[in-house]
Image 1: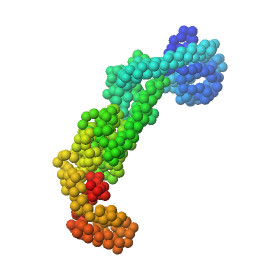
Image 2: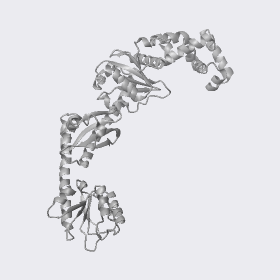
Image 3: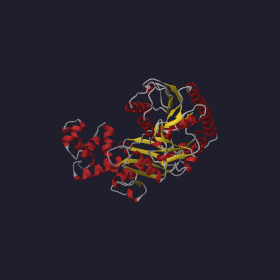
Image 4: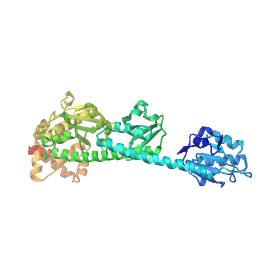
Length: 488
C-alpha cells in the first residue's frame, strides 16, 4: 500500500495538498475515477477518489455536505483535476476537509488518472505480495516453535517481529496477562493491556483477548494481526477440547472410585499425568445459599496451568480430587460462585478408602456451611459440632437409633424411614406430611406407631424428634445411604 503523502511526493504526478495535509498518513488501497454527483455510492474504504469536477455541487453548503458523505464512506483522499467548466472548491469545503483531517489534493486538468491509478494499484499489489509472504512466515515460524516445544510467550515474541505488533494474551475475566512477547513487556503492555491500540476477542472464548500495539518502527497491518488471532484461536480451541475430554474422563474415574470398582492405587499414575503429583485431597464445594455451584467451565480456567483435577457433581455439591493447595481451593470456590465454601478431607493416599475420604470432605463442607467459613478441613477443630465427627461414628449413631426401622423396611418393602424423614421435615404436621407422601392421614399415624414399636419412643415426642433428626441429618451431611448402615 501507499500513503497519501507518498503519492503527493511522486514528482511525475504534480499533486499538491490544498487541505487536510494532517491526514496524509492515510493508506490508499485502490483508486477510482468518478465524475458522478454521488461518488460515495461507488467507492469503498481506503479508496482514492479522482474527479474532474462535473459532479461537484456549486453552492458552498452543498459542497460541504458532498465532502462529508465522501469522508463518511471511508475514502482515504480526494484528487481534484478540475476542468474549465467545473465549480471551484469553496473555502467552506476546504475548511471542512481541514477540520476532518481529510486530504484534498489538486492536479492539472490533463493529469493522467490512469498513471496515478497504476501507481496506487502497483503499490497495493506489492503490499499484498509482502503480506502473503509475511503470512507464510507467521505460520511457518509458529509451526516451528510448536514443534520445538517453545512457550506461547516465546512464540509471541517471534510473531511480533513478523507482524509489526507488540503482542500479549489477556484473560479479561481474571484481569491477568497470561503470555506476552518481548516487545509487549518492554512497552509495558503486559502491565496495562487496556491501553493497547487493539484488543481482539479469541473466537470460542470471549474472555481471552489478543492485545496488540504497533511497534515503533513498523507499519501496522491489521490483516496480519487477524492471522495471529487465528493461530491462537486454533491452539486454545484444541486446548479447550482437551480440557473437556479430561473433565469427562475425570468424572468417570471419580464415579468408579466412589463405587469402588476402581482403587486409588490403580489410578495413581493417571493422577500424576494430570499434574496431581503432590499431596492431594478431596474437596467439597457447597453454596451457603440456595444456588448450586456453577462449575460448567471451571476446568477451562487458565490459572489451572496444565492441572487437570478430577471434578464430579453430586446434587448441590461439587466434589474434586485436587492438590492440597489453599490458593487453588479458594480460586475454584470463587470461580463456581460468590457464596461457595469448601470442605477439605484428610490427605488421599493410594491405600485410602475413597468413599470414606469423600465422606470426610462432605462432613467438612457441611460444617463450612454451618460456620459460614471459606474453608474447613476435616481434621481441624472447626469440624467439632453436635454431629458425629467421623463417618464411622455416623454409622454407629444411625445404627443405634434407626437400625430396627431400616431392617423392617428391607424385610417388608415398607417406607417407614422415608415417612419419618417427611414427618420431621414438616415439623410433625400430620396432614401436610400425609399429603406429601400421598397417603391417608390415618395411614401415617399407623406408620409412626409402628416406628414407635420398633425403636421404643415416639417420633412426635421431643426425644424422638431430636434423636431421629440427628441420625437422619448426620447421614445426609456425610453422604451415607441409610440403607447401607445395617448392611455394614
